[in-house]
Image: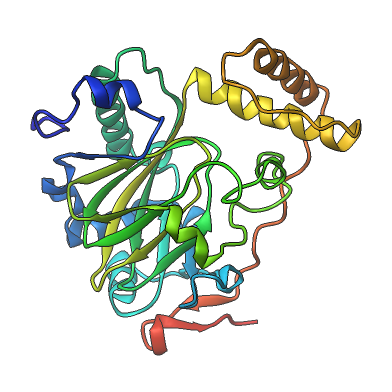
Amino acid sequence: MTPVFEPGQFDALARRDFGRAPQAFRHTLHQRSMFDDAALADVLDRYPRDKLGVFTMGDDPVDWRSWRRGRAGDLPGAELLKSVAEGRIWLNLRAANAALEDYDALAGEMFGALQAEIPGLKTFRRDVGLLISSPGAQVFYHLDVPRVTLWHIRGQKRVWLYPARAPYVTDAALERIVLKETAEQFDYMPDFDAGAAVFDLEPGDLLHWPQYAPHRIVNGDSVNVSLSCEFLSPAALVSANAVYADALARRRWGLTPKRRGDWHPASLAKFALARTAKMMGLEPSPPEPLPPSFVVDPRAPGAVGPLAG
C-alpha cells in the first residue's frame, strides 16, 4: 500500500512544533480511486442520509448568518454530486469513519501514520469527516474545540488561519463555544486578515493548526473534496476541560480566571472540576441546530430549492 505521507515531510522541527503553529505537509490520499466521482457518489448513497450535513451560504465573508442548513432529500448520490458541481452547496459527512467500514479503515491508517511520525502523540475521539463542496463555496470564520487536520483531496481552496488569542478570539467567546451555548461561528472582521497565515491548498496538501485557532475557507473554481479529521490528545482534553471550568467560574461565581498551560497544576485542577461538574449534570444542553430551510434541487438556480411545507 502507498505510504500515507510523501517522504521527508516530518523533520525534527516539524515534529517539535506539531500543534503549536500552523503547519503544511504533503500526503498521498488524493491518488486513491476512493475519491473519484463514482466512489463519492457511492459514499453519498451509503452514508446515513439523516446525518448528512447540507449547507449553503452567501458571498460576504462577514455575513456568517447567511449560513443555512438544508436537506438532500432522496436524490441519488450521483445527482447530489452533480448538484454540488453546479450549485453553491457544502456537504459534510461527519464521522464517516463511524458510519462506513472503508472510512473506518482509512481513519486507522491516517492516524496510525500520523502517530508514527509524531513521537508521543496519542489520539482518540477520532472523527473523520468527508467534505464535498461547490466551486466558490465558503466556510465562515469559526473555531473547533478538538484539534484538526485538514487533508485536501480535490480542487483548490484558500485557508486563513488566525492566532488563538484576542482579538481573534476572546476568552469569553471561546468559553461560550466550549459550553455549547453557541455555534462554532462568530463575528469576523476583515482587519483580522493582517494577522492570518494564508495557505492555498492543492490536492495532496495537509494542514494542522493550534487548538482553538479561528479559521475560514474559500473554495476555488472547481468542486472541492477534503477530509476534516478532528481528534483529541490528552493535552487537548485537559485544555478543553480547563476552559469549561473557567466558564463555570466566570458565570457561577463571578471570577475572572486566567488560562494556563495544558499541564499547569491549575489546568489539571480545572480539568478535575469540569469532569465533576459534567458528572453532576451541570453540562448545558447544546443549542438547537439550524432548522432546514431549503432542499437540494438540481433544477433550481444554484441547485437550491424551497423546502416543501
